[in-house]
Length: 87
Image 1 (spheres, one colour):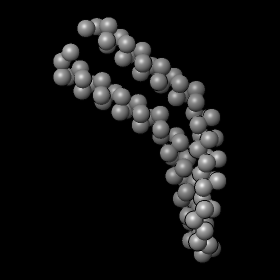
Image 2 (cartoon, rainbow, N blue to C red; image 1 turned 60 degrees about the horizontal axis):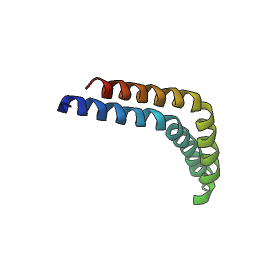
Image 3 (spheres, rainbow, N blue to C red; image 1 turned 30 degrees about the vertical axis):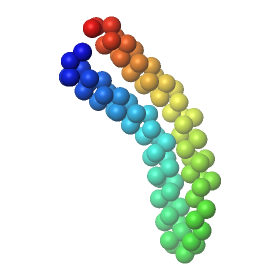
């Protein structure tokens, strides 16, 4: 195994992790931003008000993105096994 192969496998792993986590992170970010703007406009400073909507948004994003996430992880795993077999 060459150093270039290790770097390529590591890069693909990090890229896959970022792609898998992106839908949930973006959903939490958008909901947090909307609630933050609402809290700033109404001057409500309740810290716990953001937890329930964020949890719901992340779960909905996970449910909606699950088929895509599964395909992405399976594709990465297949590519990884093929690269291991090429040694």
